[in-house]
Image (cartoon, rainbow, N blue to C red; front, side, top):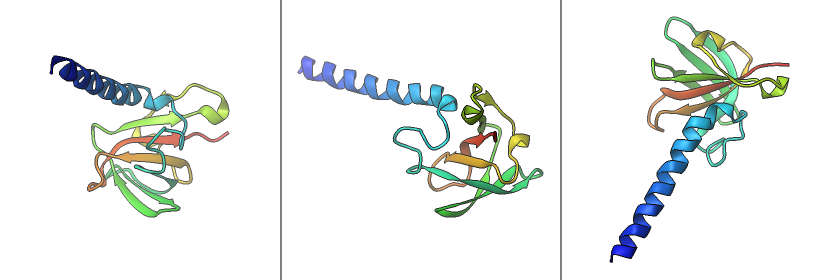
Amino acid sequence: MTSWNNQLFALFLFLTTSVYAQKTTEMYIPIGKSPGISGKSTILGNIFQVNLQEKSILIKGPSGDHSIKTNEKTKIWLDRSQIKQPNLNGTFTDCQKDLRAEVKLVNPTTSIAEWIKIQMKK
């Protein structure tokens, strides 16, 4: 029984470490390239509208229109891979109309973003 418990613990540790590792490196992964989540549990599209007062954006994409809200915990990253520059932390003011974005929601039942990646143009 002890061997089985050790195997379960090792599996749990591996899975939680993998999730944590992806969270810490997510800002460096280009838009649409996050293994296992891009296009499945994220929203891809172009920023159509920005509301600075409410700190919300409207994304138009293949899956339709999505109204996205941010809060103090929302991380915003600038994907500069197309201009061959390192990615950077951003702020809500970097959300600009017509820029491509990828959004991961806190959970599927809310419209609050856990993170937003914004693709900087060439």
